[in-house]
Image (cartoon, rainbow, N blue to C red; front, side):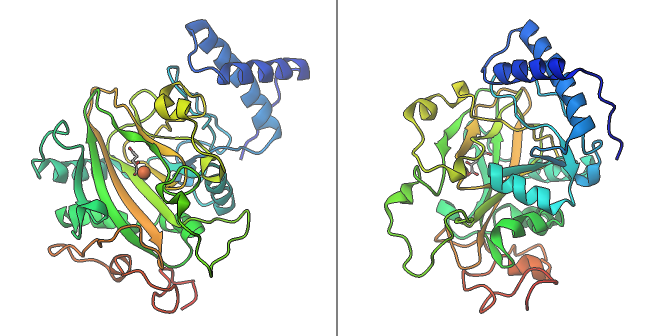
Length: 356
Ligand SMILES: O=C(O)CCC(=O)C(=O)O
Ligand SMILES: [Fe+2]
């Protein structure tokens, strides 16, 4: 890995740091402020890449999008251009674990080739679905939808994503060796559409926050205490300029309810981030992180496939995702459709290097 030569004095770097922090805290930047922001970023980047190890949340498979030290310019305003930046090698599990745990989500860019994305989109087109104005969700299974195979029966490319090699080790970081697919659905959105409000399925703001905790299962105070993770595949570009998934990084660790002010106007809150998730990329997020759907502002249609996984002894849905009748599954894909049960006693590891 090549490290850059330092180009700026300590004083220059310090003042760039102050400017960067000041501008980052704003929701909107005027054009000349955006230029100042980028100039500050260039100085920090140079300092950073000449001195320190990168940090952030955007992963690129095998560094395919550039070196591990490369900042991506945050998109220009409006809202919440991400604090995301550096690309890191997708095989760096330690960094993935740290960032996923820290932020509650992780983006892996450009995992699917354009031809794979096109094939999935073609199979969706072939369903002749009603307009998203009638129904934003499509191809659902389990959850409130009831038992179904959903879009898994639309073709092998949908089943391949169930246990895609790039996401399994990252799901394992949060869910352990034994987990199951709890439900799935797709989202299509047209310009101007919105969907639901921000929510988290665990923690102080969750509907279940008044439920008594289990008597026999005690969690370490700072351990991972929820077991529901989503892999959401983008089949169309999503991000700050378009809309799509948004969240409050780190909120899965928060002990306090979402303030009304943020709930009512997330687009005004600088803590809300819309990550850049180009077509062919996946965002993994814990359902415990405060998240939701930003209004769709792009001319193109939003298309996202959401696969939701629980630790094996947990079910979020009452209903199950059924095996697709017309598409054969591999043994591991079948294993993901298991009934909830104790890990390792009733449910074997999904990983060949895990305990039997
Ligand atoms: O629009 C999105 O990607 C978020 C959907 C959502 O809230 C969820 O999957 O739980
Ligand atoms: Fe959600």
